[in-house]
Image (cartoon, rainbow, N blue to C red; front, side, top):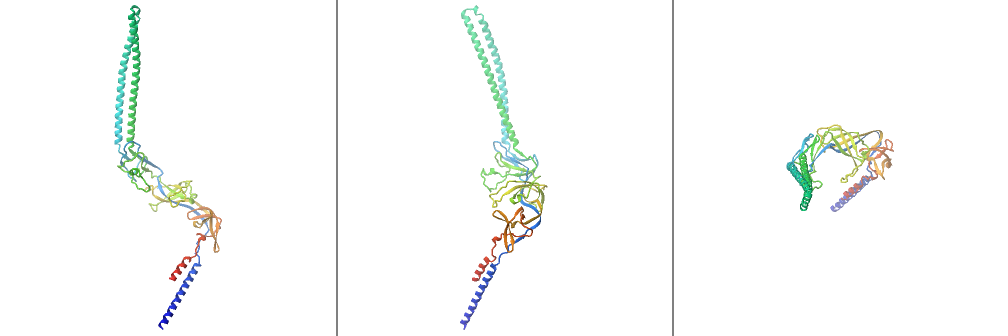
Length: 434
C-alpha cells in the first residue's frame, strides 16, 4: 500500500513539472512575439537658436620670449623669477653669471691699450727713421753734386785723376739711387706695419664691444607687462628626450646652451580662448559673433566674448581615438578677470543665427543611407526611409526640408530592431529544465 502511494505521488510531481515547463515555454513564446517599441519624435515648427558649444584653453595672444644669448663659453643662471610672477616692462627676469664675459672684456681692453701703444711707438719710430733718411738723402745729394764739380775739372787734371772723378760720380749717383729706393721701401714698410697695428687695435676694440654686448645680454628683461612662464629644462637630460618625459623648469644654478628658450612673459591683460569646432558646427559660426565663456576653474563666472577667427582648413588628430576633422577657432574675451591664467580650460557657447519658423527634428533621428541623409517616417506600423534636405545642424537639432509639421519619425534605426524575448526564451527554458 505504501509503495502504491509513493508511485502516485511521483506521478503527480512529474505531471506538475511537465505542466510548469509547458507554461514557461508558452510564456516565453508570447514574450518573444512582442517587439520592442521604436521611440519616435515629431517634426516641430518654431524658432531655433543655432548655438555652438566647444571647449578650449585660455591663451595670451601677446607674449615675449626670453632666449639664452648666443655667446661662447659657459652660461649659468644666477637668478630667475619663478613661473606665475607678475612683472612690469623692463624688469629683470633672468640673470646669468657674467664673470667669463667680464674677463673677456678685460682681456680685449688690455689688447686694445697695447695696440694703441704699439701704434704710437711705430709712428714715433717711423718719424725718427724719416728724419734720418732725409738727412742721408741730403748727404747723398751733396756727394753727387760734389762729384759732378770734380768731373767738371777733368780737363785740368791728368787722365787718371779724370777717370777717378768719373768713377766717384757714378758711385755717388748709385748710392743716391739706392738710398732713395731704401727710403721709399722703409716708408712703405713702416706704413704697412702701422696699418697692421691699427687693424689689431680695431680687432681688440671690436672684441671689447662684443664682450660688452655679451655682458649686457647676461641680463634678460621683460619687454612688456605680464606673467612669467618658465620652460622645461631640456639641457638637464644631456640632449636625450622622449615623449611623456616630465622635466623641471629652468631655475637658478642651471647650465644652459645658447639659443635655448628659457621663459615666456605673457600679457594677460587681453586673453582669448583657443578651441576647435566640429565639421557640423563650422558653418554655424562666423567672426564677430557673440559668445559666452565659462571658466572651469571659476564655476559660475561667465565672460562675454567674440568670435575672432575660424580656420578655413580642418586639422585631424590622428593620435586620438576620434579622428574627426576639427577647425581651429579663437575667441576674444570682451572683459578681463584678474584670476585668468593661460592654460585654464573653458567652455565656449557661441550665439549663432536665430532661425525663425523652421521645421526641425532631434539630431539622432537623422541617418545616412548610401551617402544621402534620410529619416524613417512612421506609416502605420512600418517605417519608410525618406530623404530630406538638411539646412542647419546643431548638437541636438537639425533643420530640415521635405517633411510636413507633425510627421512622426524614428529616433533610432528601426531596421536593427529585435524581438523583446529572443534571449529571454532561451534563459527561461534553460532554467525550467534545471
